[in-house]
Length: 333
Image 1 (cartoon, helix red, strand yellow):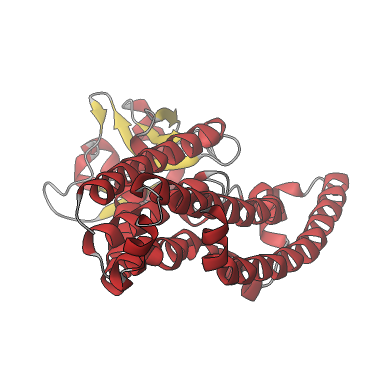
Image 2 (cartoon, one colour):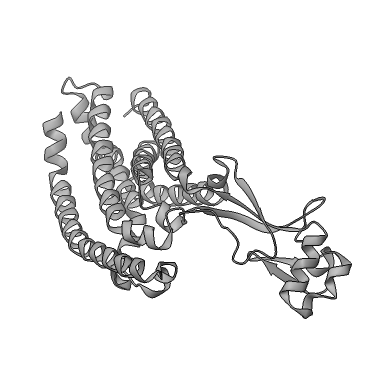
């Protein structure tokens, strides 16, 4: 059975290996250049004590190459569409599955071998791409503290492996239930994209309780967390808790940490000082017990978040494979 699967999909394997080899050579060559450039700039700025401005002064990687790397975010979805979608659907659509089951091969074994190799190949291919991207991006991560940014979190670390397993399992399940290749591919794209957006935008920030940090208005610049932390929200905290950012009485707003805050929600004694300079305005707010506030996920939680998200998608993939197994073994061919 394994030999048959190889014969059926060897051309896909050859093309995938060739594409991965080209991508690897490109990233290894340019990544080494970026690393040398970064370490050279770091040595120079350390000698002149100007490393605080290094992120603004140093440009790493070409825009075209950065765009190519960012496009790897679609790799798991493509694997689900072109590897998972047709895997069972095409067999059911053409009727070749019935011939295979008549050759003393049980449906369970047939599905186990086909799905097992597809999932293993997807995990290996996606893991290799992610490893290359993570290594290539390491100077940029150190320079820009970007690890938690969605565009980077989704293409680095171990999360892409979970995405790939889920996408392929989704394609297999959709193909098994719909028994048509093109509809299965379309469902895979839609369902995968929807779930990724929901988890990335709505659930990810709640994996672990965010930390809270307050700053004095007179502390410039604020003592922000170290490393690639994730800023979840910002605002102003008063004696009664966080000041609401909703407009109550109308009028102008002022921005604190990127969050617009109506002036009407601040102490009346301080409003008149707003246009007399930030020092007087900040001193007044400090005197009334107001502080700048941020909630954030520290850089130390990056791998915990990667593990949690990977685990979510692996569990979803396992559930989809279970559904597929039930559909294959209990439904008529």
